[in-house]
Image 1 (cartoon, chains in turn cyan, brown, purple):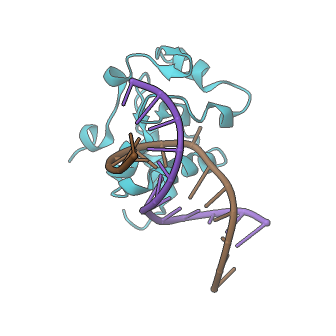
Image 2 (cartoon, rainbow, N blue to C red; image 1 turned 120 degrees about the vertical axis):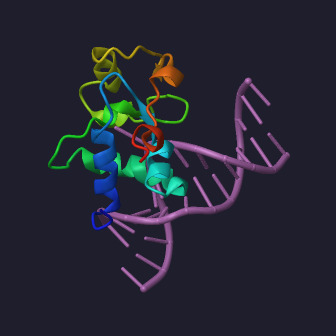
Length: 110
DNA sequence: CCCGTGACGACAT
DNA sequence: TATGTCGCCACGG
């Protein structure tokens, strides 16, 4: 399991995020054991865009539930995709973020 | 090989 | 509560 690259690990976790739910970069980083490198998660997302397998990066937001990366999505708006899944977004911020939050270290805790 | 950059986060002021 | 600064580490040039 540890043979894969850091980026791949991120992709795996992000892909496991259920529809209508969101998580934070730090949560993923922490789950991977590198909570200090939350930036790397975001950086991975950028690379995820060109990944062979599609990654629902729109379900990943920052600790505030703010769509910091919407600008990088290009064309379609991250917000649009989230709302399409039932996630209410207002002013680039996820509404009821706390309730929609999906923590891999808990949901995948085993 | 060295330097700058960055979809974040925690802490200090 | 709001704003500023530092740390973190992989990747591109």
